[in-house]
Length: 297
Image (cartoon, rainbow, N blue to C red; front, top):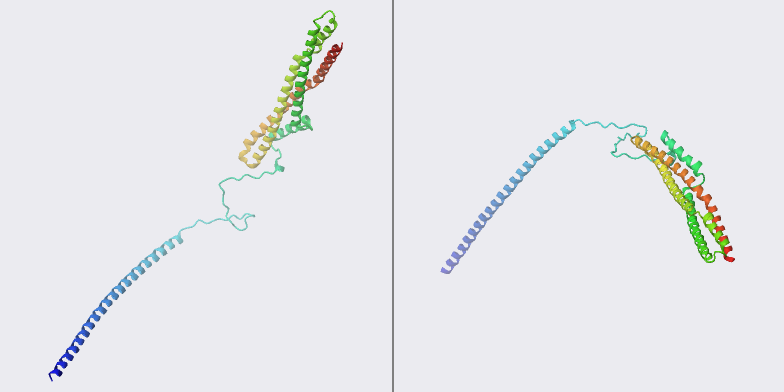
């Protein structure tokens, strides 16, 4: 009996313990659920507040943007007036370019128009048709240099003959009585025929000046052509270049006249050396013949 009572007491105690634990667990779970609900409510409230604030900001932004857009719409805009030229049928507005483009100048357009250009062109053509004719400056320069080289050979040949004559005369003077006729012939050659050393120097100097004159003529003629062409190009490119073009055409005329003057001087200085060249050659040739004849005797 006591044993049964003891077991009953133990059983009741276990049941009471389980019931207490269940209540504690239920209370704890209820407390946790309350905490979760508070956190959820807080998060939801914060989310709603943020959403409300964002909506207010968006409304404010939309309002400001609308007002700004409306202000932009009512601001006057300057109208673009399209060019309706025949070549601009698409009504595309012309755009001004800051830099000035040069007009393309074709060779066939380089025709003298102003009085200065025509005068310069006429002077150049006169040189080509009446003075130069079919000749070229390069050919004339080469010819005068050939003459200059020939005179250098003539000068060397002359002094060589004079030296030989003097040597022969010296040897003949050892016996003047027997060689009187030979000495006289040699003396006559030196005093008459070969007394041309000073003239020869003058002729060589004239050839040098002729070379300088033809070189200058070529320089001025080339300048005249270039400046005339440049003056026409400048005139065609822009009206602002008219004064500079006028200056160039006048310089071209001056250069053409200088070339003509140099050509005339060249011609006069070249003639005498060309004519005398052959005569001097004959004198030297004759002196050599006389010297050879005296050596044979």
